[in-house]
Image (cartoon, rainbow, N blue to C red; front, side, top):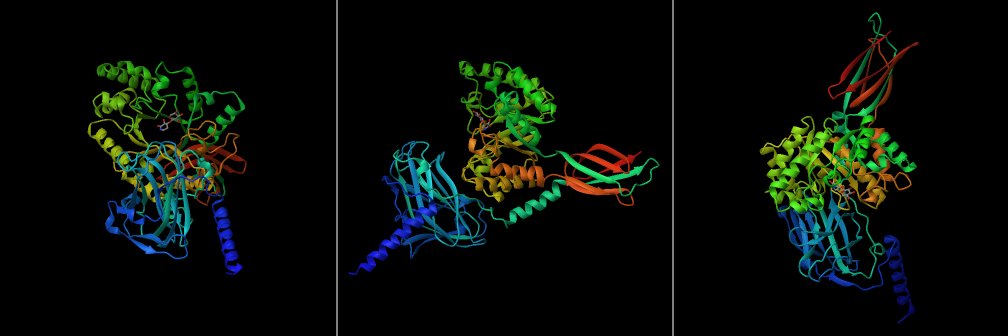
Length: 597
Ligand code: XIL
C-alpha cells in the first residue's frame, strides 16, 4: 500500500473537519451522550396529519454523503398549516428535566416555488398537552444543509412518551431529510457549547409576494387624501402658497408596556426611559402595575401619577388586566376564601367595579380576562366560563365608554388551527352569545424560535376578524438571539400587522433590556444602544409610515397630499402671511380650508 491514499484520506478528513468547524463555527462536544434517535432509523418515521392526501413520502438512496438513505417528502398545493402534514418518530430513552440535547440531521429541497424548502423541527410530549422541548423552523436550498438544533428539556419525558415531529405542510415542496441523530448529553454539556443552525421563516425573502401585497394594502387602507385649499380674505384662491403637512399623531396605535417605577425615576436611565416613550409611542400599557395582585391592597398613588404623566403627553393607555384567573397570578389572599364561591364571586365583582371605576374615562381599553385557556383556577371555582360574562358586564357598567377585551397568547404563534386558537375562538363566541359586552380581540404576540410565516399571521388575523371586533396586538416580543432574524421578523410582523384592515394597534411588551421580561427581545440594550430589530421598528414607524410633505397650491388654491391617517399639523404660508392649524385625516379624506388674512 502506498502512502498516497493514506495522505489523501487524512487530507480529506482534515478538510471535512475544517469545513464542519467553519460552517458551524462550533464543533461537537467530546463528551458522549445517549443517542435517543439513530440516523439509520428512517423507517421509524410515520407520516400523519389532517392533509395526508397532499403528501407523499418515500425512502431514497443518497450518494456522496455520510448517510446512504434519506426520506423524501413531497407536499402538493393546498397545505393549510405546516402541522397538517408531519413526520413523527417516537424516541424511547427517558429524558430528564434540564437535560441538554442536540438533534442533527441533513436536509435539502429538491423542488419548490422559491428554491427553498422548510421544515418545523419539534421535540414534544406525544400526548396532550404536547409540551415542547424544541420548536424551530429551518430552511434549505438544493444543496444538502447540515442542521443542528440544540435544546434543553423543560420537564421529564418518560421513555416512550416523547417524539420528534417534523412539520412539513408547506405548499409545493419536495424535501429530503437524512442522517438524523438525537443525542441526550444529560447535564455534562452546556447548551451554549453545542452547535446551532440559524432558524428562519417562510416569506422572509426580499421578493416575497405576501409583502408586496401587504405594502400595497397599506397604501390603500392606512392613507387618505389631505387637501388644503387656501383663499385670501376676499375669498379668492391663493396659488403658489406653501403648504407643509406633518403627521403628528398616528391613528394606528404604536406602543409598549411601561412601568410606574421607571416613569417616576429621576435617574438618567429614568429620563432616557421617558424620553424614549415620548419619542416613539402613542400608546402604553402598564406591565404589572394594574394587575389584581398589584392593586389588591389599593391603587397606589404612584400609579396614578405615572398614568397622569402619560395622559398629559397624549399617550393613550390600555388597562391590563382585570382578571388573570390562575392562582399564580391571583392575589394569594384569595386562597383564604377558596372554598367559598359566593364570597369569591363578591370579591371579584367588587374588584372589577372598583378598579374600572377608579380609572373611568382615562383608559379607552381594558383587558377584562387574560389567558383563560391556561389560567382558569378562578373560573373553575366559580362554575366555569359564565363568570366571565358577569365580569365583562360589571366592567361595562363601571365605564361604558371603555372597549373591553379578551386577551391571550399562543394565537399567532400556534396558527389559526392550533388548540389555543380554537379555545380562544370558542371563548369569544361564548362571550358574544351570552351577552358579554366584549368590544375587541387582544392577541399577545410573544415569539421565540418557531416563527410563523407572515401569510399565516394574516390568516390567523382573518380568522379572528370574523367576529366583527377590532383586533389589538397587545404584547409583541421577539425572544431571539439571531439579530438578523429578529430584525427581519420585526419588519415583516409589523408590515403584516399594519396591512391587516382589522388591526388597530401593536404594543411591544417592553423596549429596554433592563426592564424586559425576555431581555434579548428588547429594542434597546441596557446602555440604550439600539438593536437591529429596534432599528427595523423605527425605520417603519418613524420613517416609512410618516408623512411630512411640502407642496405649493395650484391656480385653484388647492394642493393634495396622500398621507398616513392621523392628526396633522398644517402650516400655510404665502408672502409674509402664514397660518398653522391642526386637522385629523381619516380614510375617506378631508379638505381643509384656510384663509390667509
Ligand atoms: C408578565 C410581565 O412582563 C412580568 O414582569 C411578570 O412577572 C409576569 O407577567 N402575558 C401577559 C402579561 O398578559 O401580563 C405578562 O407579563 C406576559 C405574558
